[in-house]
Length: 162
Image 1 (tube, rainbow, N blue to C red):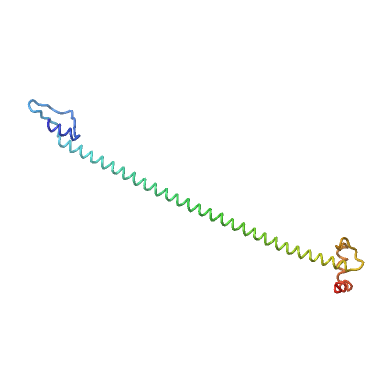
Image 2 (cartoon, one colour; image 1 turned 120 degrees about the vertical axis):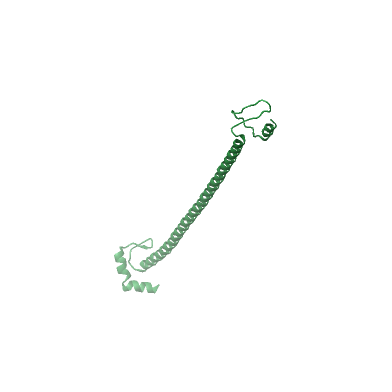
């Protein structure tokens, strides 16, 4: 009984249904109680090893999940950088197009200025021509008659006089 109480204190109490109790000192006769205890201890060790393996597998799975999440984060960063570069490219293209438009507008303005200058010259030439019909200082005759007058000697002399 003293052995049993020591086992109880250690938490190794095993109640087997096939015990025989004898008269006198109480002797418990089991199938092979020591081998059963060893077998149970081995099973406990195996179950603890299995638990350790399960925990190790869970740790590995967690590590793999973490690595996958980190890879997804890196992929998202790369995609964001790609999108930023794409937007920057389009912004530069828009700026270049606007600059081209501004350059074109400036060129158009220069050409318009040149055209207005030519018109002013033509108006002065038309005023120099005697007998040419005028309307508000701008030559209003048909264009063919203007050019025929423009290239005559009288027109050339009138321009030279000025």
